[in-house]
Image (tube, rainbow, N blue to C red; front, top):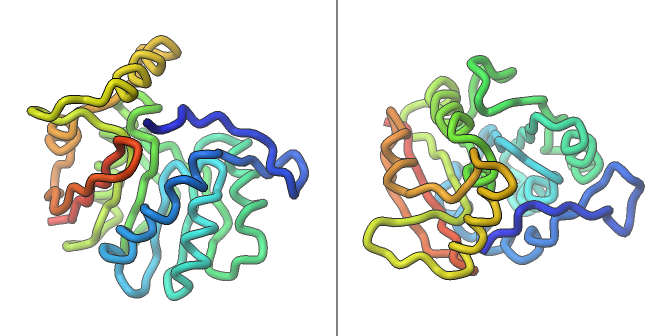
Length: 208
């Protein structure tokens, strides 16, 4: 089960730098998939970068790629900047709302979005694919990570409880079905579904 993003202050910094405990548990398994699906070089846009810990870790692990973090929340943008300070291949974070009709970036060679789909309105997922269709060229990957439902697969009790918790906090949130997400992925093909620890999935979509 993914955490509902409870940030805490990082121990080694001031108030700007936040820490999401789930990051330390999932960053290496996510990186192992990214190493297989990302291009060898180019610009990777992360949508909903949150605390910024993931992109800082990935950028240091994959230095041939240039990384563009983004988030709509001012507190997140400050935390991202703090985590990525001094990492040469991370650009300054962009204020970007996935649901917006226009994004402050014209192109990318790959995109990733970690733990956003279930903690946002459905419109954000629709906007994510619409934005990816504008920015990505043919055969470019869009990587998603998080908990999902699947037809014909029993959902873990922990994910059912997590889904109920999310919907109690905001009725527009909640775990999505892989089939619904894929149906929304206009112009994309789901090429990989990877089982991840703690009942999460990696979904790899490729621009047609």
